Image (cartoon, rainbow, N blue to C red; front, top):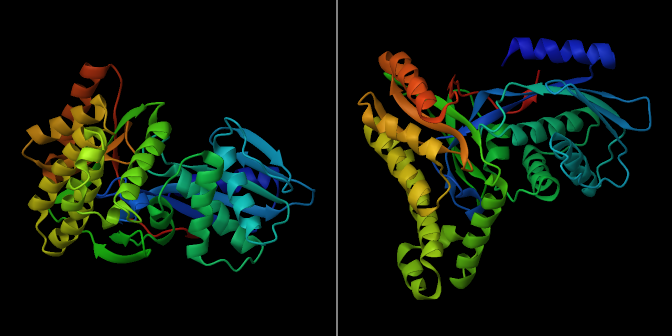
Length: 381
């Protein structure tokens, strides 16, 4: 938790609205392995991190809600009545989406004041949107005694993303942000929403994120396209989701679908297997095999599911060439954001320095390096 961020939000709220009633921290997340498997009702392996959103609330004395986005120095007011998505509304849609989805459940929300800010880099694929959504629903639940369970809250957050941000995401981001545990990753079954915590201690190695600082505009449209492909193939297989498919069953309909559809569905089937295999490798402390699995997952994302980009591929190739990096892959929805790397502790400084220099030479822009800790999920400060 960033103490400077918390103090900035406290100070800004006091200046604009006076006394804080509720103060919430909601973290972003990483994902060790398992991309695009969540909306296929499969398995993922996320963890909450020590970068997130801090949100301060109080009841309003007016008839409308007032929101101040600290990092952007932007103010927004709205009425709780008849909320509709805003075209190009950006962060506003996450907030009003949560309010709208909560009221759909018959929960009574009164006008409120809100100041929020965060230290999750934009476009990094660390789920700043889920962190914001969770901070809002969690804060409103406390402020107005809505008696929502955490499971109900993450569904509200997910529906806000679907209906107001237009991204048909799975449940992983919201779950990891809400239920995260310190120093642990969660093996999450996205169908049952049951999770198993795994202590993450790689001893002489550590997790390091490298952000391409690239966020290609096609990401959201391509994300929804991948989901549509998966649903069409599942329908042809007469199953609920690709979680239930096997390589054999997929082969039986290969003549009925394009090679592109076949490879995308095959990736999901194989990625689900990789997630479960990763859990066993972590249990057995076989970190080198885990690293190889990350490289394998990147090849699938790159060549089969086609969600990588040249910047991500370049970073993973640099990692492959260094014997002190035992695994790396792109992380997140794709088309930009971060790679996740397992690097020897004594080589982190030299590897990240050399990688940063090579990346700048190649693309003419800086990449960013993040050292993260696995943290607890959404909570009151």
